[in-house]
Length: 203
Image (cartoon, rainbow, N blue to C red; front, side, top):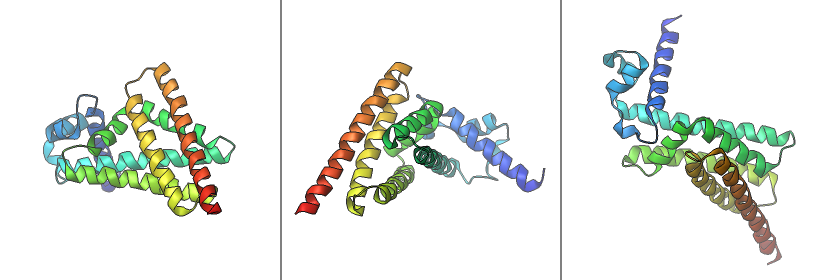
C-alpha cells in the first residue's frame, strides 16, 4: 500500500470512528479527540496529520452525511426512471437510509439546531443542496415553473426531514405507518402545487 493510500485509509478510519461514537445520547460536541483516536486505533498525535481539530472533523462528518443522503436520493430517481412511483419510491428510499444510517441522519438533525454556528451553516448548506436537486427534478418533470418547483421542494424536504426524526427510534410498525402518512402529505403538496399553478395560468 502506498503512503497516499495509507493516509487515506487512516483518515477514513477516523471519520468512521467518529460516526460510530454518535448515538441518541451523544452529539459532536460531546466527543473528544482522544476518544476518536482510540476508536480509530491511532495515537492522538496522528489525528493532526488529517484534521486540524475536532471541529474540522465535525464539518467533514456533516459534509459526508449530506452527500450520502443526496447520493441515495439520486439512486431513488434511477429506480423511478425504471418504473417506480415518484413519491412512494422516494419515501421508501429515504426510510431505508434512516433505518440503516441512524447515527448519520441523527447528526444532521442535531447539528441543524446545535450550538455551533459553523455546524449549523454546514447542515443548512446540505439541506439546501437537497432542495436544489429536488427543485431541478420537479422543474424538469412537471408543469411547475422554477419558483413553484422550489416552493414545493422546500415544503417536501421539511416534511421528510421531520419524518426522519420520528423514524430514527420508531418500531418497524411505526415506521411503516409513518411512511404511509408522509406519502399522503407529499401527495397533498404535489396536487396543491399543480392546482395552484393551474389557477395562476388562468389569471
